[in-house]
Length: 274
Image 1: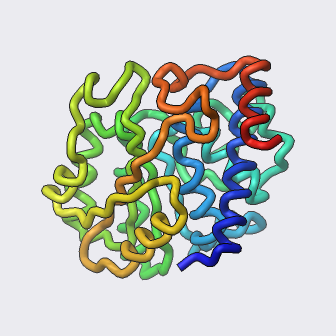
Image 2: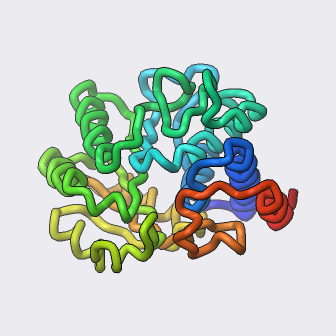
């Protein structure tokens, strides 16, 4: 159970991460704010409370691994890595610039702390499976965490990977579904129905937990339950708000892939207390 002091620290980390996201997208004049902002609270929890990682030794063998399957939300991952100290925070404003270490999609060869290059939707769960299988084969204690999108879950490879996770009994793997109900073309249910993801993943043999993805206690309880679940992987369905933290972006599909103007960024940062 998180203490109140720990929750307040995580809230502050999340606030700063959202600030990084707004600043980098405004500077780049392109990118994906909606789905980046919806996943902030999870990454704040993982990077500042749960995961065994060291910015000074980003390749240590027993580190926990985080995979961002929905790679277009790269600013989300960069905000966590910058706040954690994997690179200088000033670099967030170089997003998508020529020769920057922060490209539009995560690049494991450029950016410290990025485990795998991603961006082609549907592939992250397969990669996470491979890393989890390797951990079991090598008898390593690390855990693997992967964030997938609800729109991304319309990809067939997600479901092929979901079968693989269960087949190999990957209880060292925890997946999170960022269930914000919106994608670039509108509501998930309108583009391609994805009703009742809990029943779908349970049918594939996963242990499934459903939570409020912006509540740190619920995130913590879910991750703790996943750690104690043996013989199968865990899917945490996070009910989230696309654009969380910026009132004019929240629950608006139009903010899936549109960067804020200078004026909009100023308004968003003011809402965040900067």
